[in-house]
Image 1 (cartoon, one colour):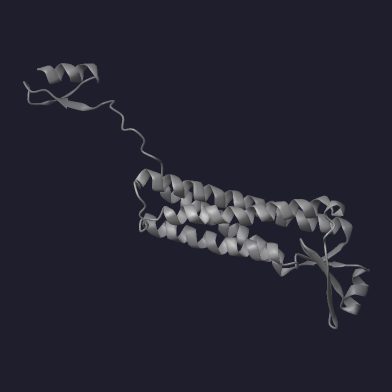
Image 2 (tube, rainbow, N blue to C red):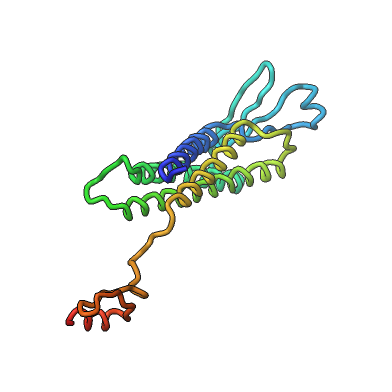
Amino acid sequence: MSQMRRQLLGTAASGVGWVGVIVATATNDWVRTCDYTKTTCVRMDELSSRGLWAECVISPSLYHCVGLTQILTLPAYVQTARALMICACLLGLPAMLLILMSMACVRLQNDTSAVKKRRARVGGVLFIFMAVCSIISTIWFPIGANKEEDLMSFGFSLYSGWVGSALCLVGGIIILCCQGIDPGTPSRDNSFYYSGNRGTATLLDPPANHAKSARV
């Protein structure tokens, strides 16, 4: 698979993952908890759905949500999860712009191959950092919720966050791997220089011997 195809694959995976992280952040079906005993909740078919921004009551005849607006009284795991998910969503924008500007089909003024590779690497690192923020948030939140109430199940928002985090992580790694390593400044060690009076290539120690050969 060519480098361009690998970069397109990594960009597509990271883009889909970014959308998944945004969906997880915006929706409130992270965990399903029970306000009573598990047996009572199963019999009544009534569960509470909790997310970053609201807590809802779900039953066959009722769906009611209460916003979590009291920031100072919220548990630490909710506030931390909010901060990490918002950070992850915001990081996706510069990461995607850098990746798109590093594409071979995009040409900017004074663009070089080295500059494009640096852009792609920075974008890949941002996607990986974004995935780490989302993974920490989506793992810590259900653990904290389970300590407060009995955790019945995970919601679709949490699954969306997990899938999005995994895609961003894989996409970022693919983007980094397909860029290779900068060759840097070519080394002059073990270079061959041609001497005019011999007509053969001679291994010399640059730069002193090269200057001597040039004067011959």
